[in-house]
Amino acid sequence: MAATTTNTSSSAALPAITLNTVALILLSGAVGTLAFDLWGQAIAPLLGLGSLAPVGLARGFLGTLGLPNSAAWGHVMHLFLVGVIAYPVGWLFVARPIFAKVVPGLHWTVASALYGVALWVFAIGFIAWVAGNPAFLGFARITWVALAGHIFYAIAAAATVQYLDRLRTA
Image 1 (cartoon, one colour):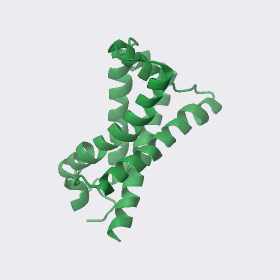
Image 2 (tube, one colour):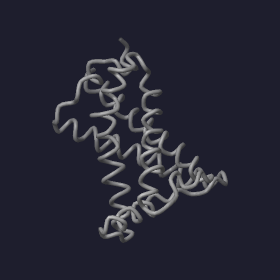
Image 3 (cartoon, one colour):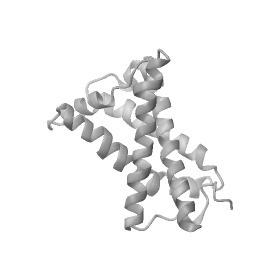
Image 4 (cartoon, one colour):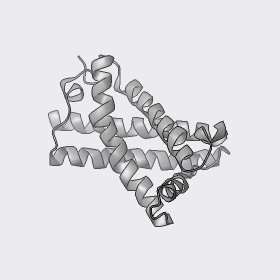
């Protein structure tokens, strides 16, 4: 099977917890977060589509849980805990292995785009609601900007994983 599908030994098996895996998580999460924020904070607003406010959403979520919800904590939650750690861990340890088993041969770009949709459902459908907003933010225009942003995030993060996996096995 080609390395571009989800049905490879490296994608079907759970990765070992090593320094390489930690670096892979951090780097892929950083690239994905950069793609998400570039889209949501620069490109979408320049196109007149509106600006994403993930820090505001994170602050609302933290506040609902009774946790500190300053702007600094919102940034830590969005940029680091979610973008750099949680979402790439979800790709490496949950989504990618599931896609490899359930839909063998599915190209990683399709699998990662579907993962992006799942992230969007979680963030905008559930977290936004917990934070006191309407689920899916009432399906306003920003909802669709967020959908694109989560898909861009997932594809960029997965592309980084693919690239670094190729470097490691070459």
